[in-house]
Image 1 (tube, rainbow, N blue to C red):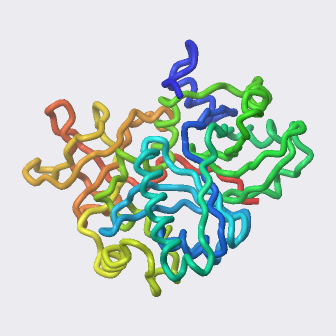
Image 2: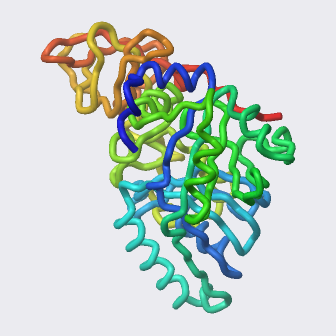
Image 3: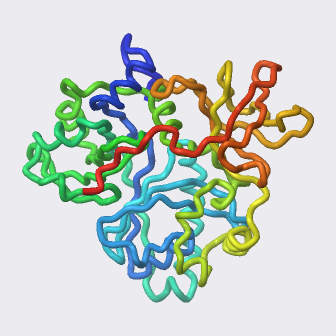
Length: 351
């Protein structure tokens, strides 16, 4: 995905998604199917989420954890049935994730649980994935299908007929707006992309994708999440199922459950920064500038708010909204205020 398309700038693209509808080519992300009698138990070993209680054709954001509770990757898991899941992981983690999944599938299938029913993983090589996002996304897509999209609420999916193509359509996205992520077989990708990119739809690049997701308070793996960050520190405790907090049974559970009980030493926070924008790596200090408190992991001038926004990690005790801190930008300390996320209102379709 390029930073932008043609002569349309990042801010114009960003604003078009907020006001109308844009399309993102996210086919670089890794799409996989997991199947088998014990697929639910297998994925509940890899993640802290309650997949057994997830309804068919419902999705959840979750995290793949290492033994220390660190985040190997964040992922969207969609349950088609108790023995069938569709999983999307990040392109930047492709090689690492492929090797890790291969190792874990082999471990599982050689265990007593796996012998009750082995798990198979199928990588959907060369499949397309298009994200149609914005307040006009639903009306645009509705004109191409007889399926009543009002039935498809945020976090659910269905196989939808789109002008003769039967496509997996999930309602959600990475912008904070209403929208759909559409999985497409390789032979159909070009035709479907042409169907979905007529006016008022605009092609949207990586630059606007980043500013949209940051306004929506969403993490970018490699910036805001990594293998030393736990879901509790990252403000993602909500992905940990209530039953999993009691039973554990997932990789990294010891650290994660301890942090849930005792609290983490650092927490992900949102910031509004005065003056120049704070970028990744900018240090966060107490107002006096004497005590270093944390670091910025993502930062931009917000096109929607007209302010400089950022997210980062800060020492527990300094994490409450309204707290004033200082951020070092271009060797100067700038005033910043801790602000709840998302920075801009979410507009998901919930029926």
